[in-house]
Length: 176
Image (tube, rainbow, N blue to C red; front, side):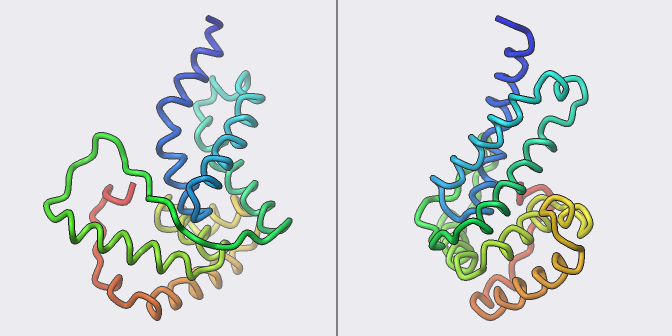
């Protein structure tokens, strides 16, 4: 097998679950998330010969995902629903209280479904991906002011529609 193809295959196998989690949070739909990741990986494959040495393949793929998502917003509005299950990280710790985690997951899913796609994308970048405002703006192709305003509006709406989430304290590394 061609070494470049083998490296790309390895990249896809190891990073797809994490990419799918981010894509799901961006789109709110498992099928749309899979389409988004597939499209981003196809574009990454076309540039693989220059990416594999730089070590920036995942950052490049994520940036493509965010740009594609913004393009999809602008082209057409997809009815927002979150019918699928949030993909679980592989090999992670099992939580001591399954019922509490399930309730939290359902509450979070319902609250995220009430946000616009742009607001959801900003929250994913800022809090799930731990990006700065400038990085989020660059990835989405918008101004820092837009990121700030969308973050503020999204958090305000989450506080209104799901006040129980205010008690949530995410430990470092558990959101990934």
